[in-house]
Length: 377
Image 1 (cartoon, one colour):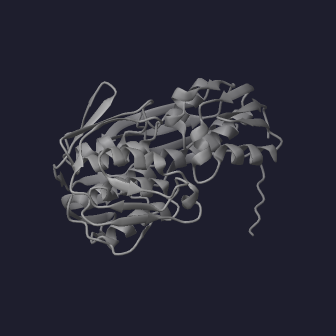
Image 2 (cartoon, rainbow, N blue to C red):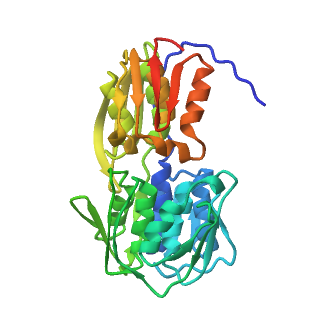
């Protein structure tokens, strides 16, 4: 085991770029594979999770190569061009890969099985099975609700209206991907708005997805067209540097070219509410996604209350947010975040356990946590 010695307090100064957004990377690879024609992707995050998606699509006959000028090239096979892999597809530790691939495979003419590592095999998958079954998919998991996911071919999926009981961008995306294979229109409604990368990217690939009120609608049977995709920097990765610059005295940090999609910027909105000194400049759009440059300076934070409506936009940033809450003046309370307990680990328990080792006053609740902040850890 490696040991590290960290001498603080430190100062963060300079300008950095962060790796590509993982959520967008998954979606770009999947849509490029099932589109007709060539897709060029720049800025793809080649992490183990995303490479699990790449490997699965290669096993189903999709050609995916690195381009000599950078990025990757996907030779799309169209909606119905995937081939039977002849063996289970291993999604590693990626819940995003498993749920999104389930949506695509629900409309194929061959049987498929999705498996994962020990951690992924303990994550609930009934929540994605139910909406796909509503579309007519023959899909099942173990009676415990955990992977593997088994999918058998059906003659045709049928468009339906589906109201999601729990806000989940992965489940919504799986439904929309399966809806591409269904007869007629399919509509989905979520209880709280989640990240909309799939909707934006489907439009970029030529699909006329639409939204009326809280309902998102997709039409089945229409082929997608290959596209050029630029993946912005990952806000979840940037959040660690953002919090660091906010709490470290005399810091001044610029983060360039990262995603500022309003369905993902919950951690920035919360930090601003706590008194953070954060500015977003040079706003622009690439491949349908808003991007910008972030200027961060230190500020004294104050504790706040965070409720259910703010959770979906901040779901992946809560671990580092806890550090910000520990450094704030007063109490910070988070409720409605029970989703954190069914990630790759129980994030609520993990955050509480580790921060207590640093003498942070933090207590877990069934759906969140309470932090009594102080000026130092």
